Length: 300
Image (cartoon, rainbow, N blue to C red; front, side, top):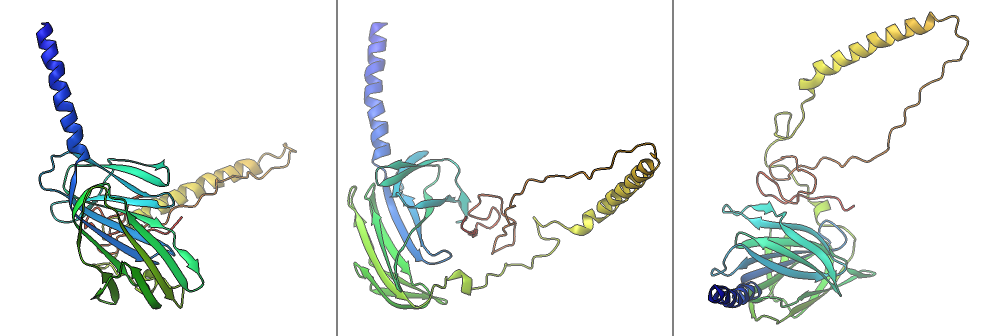
């Protein structure tokens, strides 16, 4: 019996470190970082798409660090159709020195996270620094920068020499690089623009299909009109009886007091709809539950 427990303990010592090591030695097949300055807010939107290596055993946990002043707004995974689905199984972010740390529990290979980070303003000049902290080895690391509206000059260090034109938008890209575990990648951005215009404010977003009373998620007033009219009728009848009863109480000398109802003031969040298919989004959604399109929210 003692030999059995001894062998079991030795087996745990050999197996457990190997599991921990497998988690710590996760390799990312690719990381694609996009920097969108002054896109829909006067700040930097950082979008990071990543794919773990093919030999990764799932489920697996990956931990990332973002700057302390960053605001994590979305964590999502790509499904088999390439659509983004919100991930709720993640921990953090929590403060860790100059960083904020969060852990994503993955059951598939491809995922994304997004956060906003402040820009430094000096008149027409904007300055921003990005840093990949080297938490994981990356086989292919790509980075591209979206040029803001009314930009008069833009410079990056290291220099991004390639320019891609997609519609009315211009992107600056660099050569893909391979990074080892612990190897950092930094990029400094310095640009000037003549206005404070945002990209999304100048581009009207139209739904993929007409939004009407039959659109899923929309509420049709005609369906509830009979109930509303019936309710008003009941209120008027009850009010008439109440008035007749009160007017007949001539013996009462007490002045009638108006009843004041206090309603708690509160702001209802404005309904938000997917710009691609028109489906109404639920609170907290960053991606459409029907088509996977990105949901835009006003900054609180």
